[in-house]
Image (cartoon, rainbow, N blue to C red; front, side, top):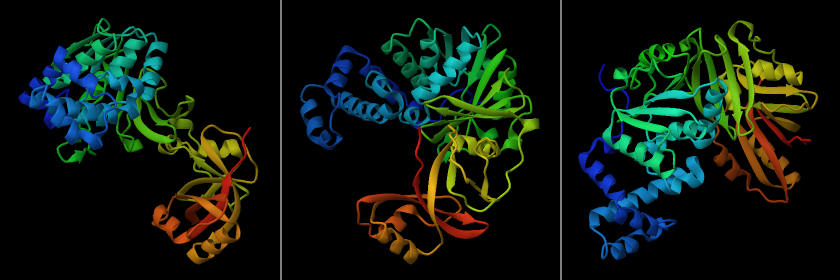
Length: 408
């Protein structure tokens, strides 16, 4: 099988890029990177001119590029990013630390002591696993990606637990490992890959590899349709601070179930496929509106949220739940609704002016209107704040106005 076990990163397969990266690992390269810590990208031209008086131009260019990648990576890796190394696609595709740490804890809870990380990329998941004391074989087919993963393991003091191997993942014997983790490349030269069989390696191969291990997890795109999920796996959607980050197929745990995990709190909601509740019935808008987390929606567990809050949908096709009472749930954000209007910009503008609303949060579901455009048209002035939902109620375009419900 060709093209297995690596990221589709044009920079990663460039021999000159490999040489440039290795130069960064020298004492001179590390000293230059230290000088660029917290540099201002706006001053790069002046900075580059100064640095080229002391360093080779090629090294300066490589260091500046790496410094920019570290700054971008801080969103995913926090303080670790300043010590780590990256490729452009490595920053884009790597699992953020919070999600990788959660998954590593799950593996540890299953009793996993050794794991084969197939398609390891720059090593984000391997690092989290090693920090839980799990010995990791990290495999990727690309030379530069392997160099970066190895450098990251060393930079974070985890080299003894992470073995990086440059190889085609199809050639790796995983029989001696407690678990397998597969993270196929889902980006190509033209951007995101939506066909799972066009992943590198293909989804069918990854599933076969996962089934050979006592425990396994297979990372997939969050948009995978439920009918493409095998019957014998636990399909989990993971969000972090309200944003859906990824989906994972787990082998060896909760077969035939769908679930949602919300980070950073770690709240988890799941249901067996056979016992999932039917879609809740639509009903008139009540005093409270519940906005389910995106992971809950992807996992098709909105009905479970509706049952917990004693509510129903505002529209058969819209994932907003409404209820007459306020109920605490970690799986949805609650709002108190004060006004329900047919879609009419002039009426909304008049209402907001009357309420002296100067800060407006615009949310939409089932509406083509862009929130920022609506906000501009409101010409807000005042000391109060409000939230408006652009949506449909019983099929009709509607504006719901309210504010976050009290908690605690």
